[in-house]
Image 1 (tube, helix red, strand yellow):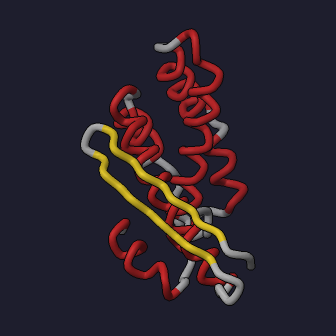
Image 2 (cartoon, one colour):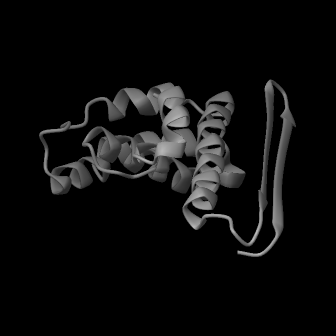
Length: 142
């Protein structure tokens, strides 16, 4: 790995975050990937928090709480995610912003799949991976 530098600064509303990372030829690739995963976790957390500021995520979370749960097969969970109740709830939320409805619908589908499959115990995000350098972030998110 060559010399390099990554810097991320967020100063938006209540979100203050600075992440910096410098690489040198001897930088361990796993350590670098842990940094990138921590960056991804931070953005994922903020992304969901931001969605909640302008979308009715409570309504969707209520519908998703009716998921068949951990004992269900992946097929049953996928059937649930494509059920008329889930799909119509997503469409109803997305249609409130007719200009961006398609994009919002796609985002809400991804959110729903990740939420339901994570509850099944499937690894669908970096926060679930047991990487020693990420334990602090994983515990913070839980």
